[in-house]
Amino acid sequence: MNAQSLLRRSALVLGFAGLIAGGACAQSSDPTPQQQDIHSDKKDIRQDKQDLAKDRADRNADQRDVNQDRRDLNKDRVDRNQDQRDINKDKSNLQKADAKYGANSAQAQADRKDLHADRVDRNKDQRDINKDKSNLTADRKDRNQDQRDINKDKRDLHKDRKDLRKDRKGK
Image 1 (cartoon, rainbow, N blue to C red):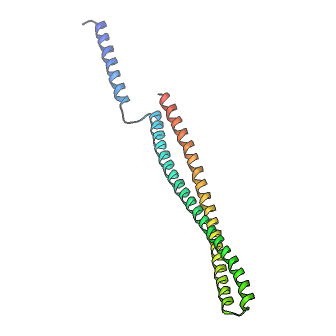
Image 2 (image 1 turned 30 degrees about the vertical axis):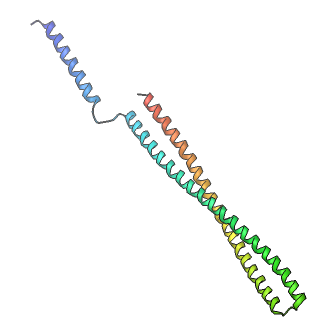
Image 3 (image 1 turned 90 degrees about the vertical axis):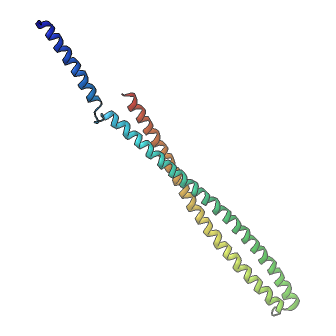
């Protein structure tokens, strides 16, 4: 064999060995920084989706609370207004009973008792109204905070998806 063919074969063998070694290196378990970025972006996206789902569930629960508090508030207002009408009616009955039977009569005393009971009911309903208003305010505050969290999570999700597209393009 001459030296020239030996050199050719040696160069071919070395080239082929280099190709095999390069392929094996490319398939090694060490991910490149770009692959690590893609992996972390996908993980961030999954986490953002979970956060978004939790925040939406919280917001929806808070909205249900707001709706319930509004219904309670309206019912309490109806009750209070009815009690006020009863008070006004009892006042006029008491005036009539005082004029007709005297201030110390049994009917006048019964009307005073009814008047007192209606005032107690009205005051209780007013306290319920005040409590429902504060609950409604707190529930609205919670709902609005949850909506802000949702908006933030949406922005994070958008940024993570944008990073993923950028990392995939850079391949």
